[in-house]
Length: 152
Image (cartoon, rainbow, N blue to C red; front, side, top):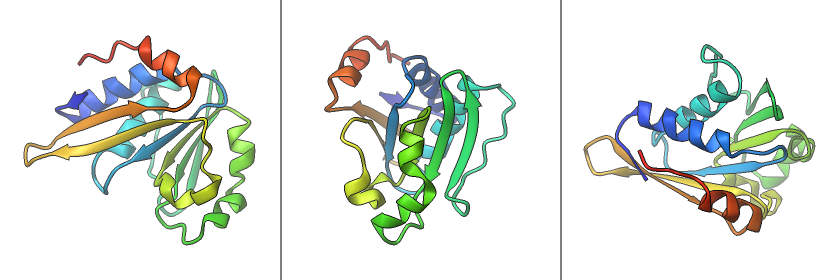
């Protein structure tokens, strides 16, 4: 799905939120500056309030937010140097409570769950537009994806 602006990214995140369930894990893939944090901001504001402050947890590694589906855990694993470091963040507990949004999921190695939604964001040329792709091997997520209307 093409995202022409940050507002498109926010609307897209709101649509994904509408299909989220307790214990979901959403792994966000893409280069620096491609819009992962903008997606998270839109998702969390849809789940909480439009004015919720949503800073990037680049240095804290984790921010949490209360929502109707339980706690939303926003992980930014950019600075993780070894996959076992994610255990110190309580990631197992996060997966069992609420929704987990993970930036830089590749740094989790073997701890990245198979039951997840993958969001891949890519830059489209010099226009500033992005391409978003949702995919999952999980049958539950596949059914939800089939029911989503993701037209801009």
